[in-house]
Length: 309
Image (tube, rainbow, N blue to C red; front, side):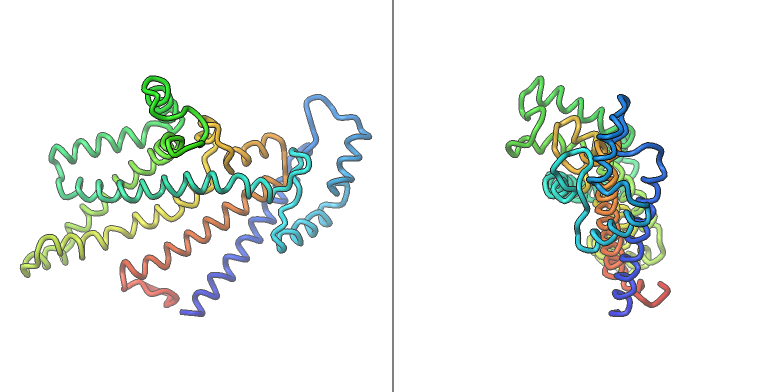
């Protein structure tokens, strides 16, 4: 088992280095530079800026400097925000995105899975039709439409929540609901379909034929085995939500990572783009690792590091 974890850590480090290198190459392959504007900057000023940020060095020297900084957790300066480092942007933006992301993830798991289970157990009954109708609406309605509706009704008409900012607990309600709408609906549908498939398996019929209590059949055998595809989806979803959503953060005026990421793209802020990409990659890899470990607890037949299930 320790060998498996060592291989995964080594694989994660190599993956992050490859992602960092590819991001660096792609950023420098794009025509123009971080100080290229519609209104041309005088050559002398452009030269001074390039010298200040070491952009006049060769690509290889810039790459080596960046990777050295990465190894010491120094993501470099922001090219678009004078006097601000990428680390500062992460420190200021990640808590906002993470707090909203954690609340949204908790809501998705706590509500989506039970609703999907109930819908499967009540297949072709009114509650099943109602759940599937709401889930279909939730999947098809874009998050920015949902955010706009939340602001219009709950902030504008009813005045229950603020229309922007997170100065108190009510400020989190709108972003969390808008951010979790799609994934909550998807998890409910995925749980329902997975449960229906498991309930048709022979071992469920055998358990029922042996007189095992229905609650035990559902809780111990059906739900547990139905969770594998759900866990597979939830892991990367959490990484995506934790790093923020530009649309939601823009609509609710939240200073999170998503807004910094999009602003860095429009401003050609190379170091910020690479920093945000690496953070997302790290979170994604960590969540994939947690999902792999969770497989072993859900289904003991899946043995980590054995090379086969």
